[in-house]
Image (cartoon, rainbow, N blue to C red; front, side, top):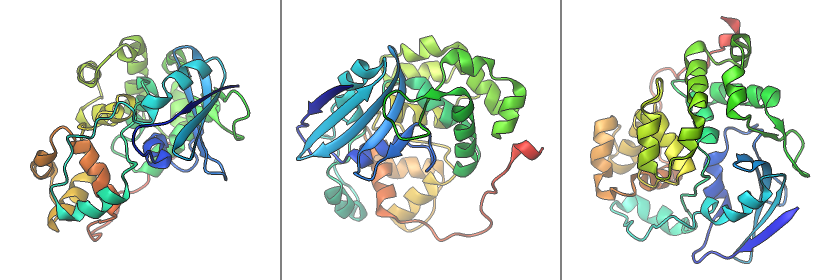
Length: 298
């Protein structure tokens, strides 16, 4: 076991910062213990690793296991949002004032690992979350490897890119992911080395969007997590524009309308949408919900 203590300059809410990396309640790469500590696995440049993060008296404590332990502890501040400069963010809408004060510990952290964010983002394309998370669990349980150290039971580490490239068609089908998403992930895995070498969010966006099956939404979802980009808006999301419009104006809107509303937050537009999500404001449901499909029955 390796360990590190890090005291941030500003308050940090560990749950808010690490929460976006969780893909559903049964995510094999993410657990929260009864003591509040968060466990997370990662395939680092040095190999698989398990990280346990806890907060006590304003100090973040990291404990890590496996070949990737040193890397996980070295990058712990970045994961906790140490590189996130929120100094230019100013609340422009009264509805956000209370939530901004309440969540002063909100930071946009970065993992530095593109494929870990890309695979689940592709699985979430054009489907409801539960459908994508089911596929993510199935694939990790079958092709991931056990988490190093005393991690909670059932935790897994994401496979290497070579494994994603070799998953057979029948396995994708059993996971619930259809051929289009499977092909997108396999193609991205062939370019994993180049994707992981990107040093900026803009460079990652350029590389990601040259790949078939990866557009604005998927790129933004990846860059929010891997690069901690506070301005990467998930344009094309099934719900986001409606939520932003309703929270800020009382009326639902579309993607162009959302971007107009977020213009005063340029440079921090993703941060603004996170705060909007924390208000809990949602438009009243109208019409049928998007159905949960099961490609395994097709």
